Image 1: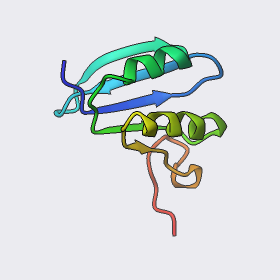
Image 2: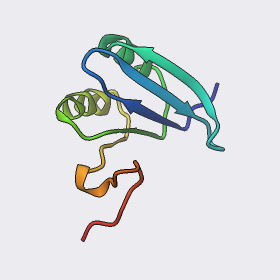
Image 3: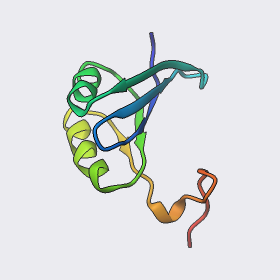
Image 4: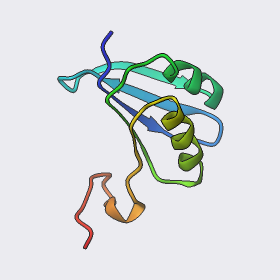
Length: 89
């Protein structure tokens, strides 16, 4: 299983993780706690991990960066209401 990108939907106690391969196909769908998520990502070689911007995302982003991952947390102002990125001046 080769993962290229991981997207994480953050919740209060449960996180949903989706892993994509290089072609953009979904390879992994996983529901886990914070501890399970950090354990799962500890041994992965992933190009990019993306997650939504909220209070808990910065803590998790720092923990994932310490593991050596590149983490993207888009600003809330750059998101539109339908979940796509919009241009912010």
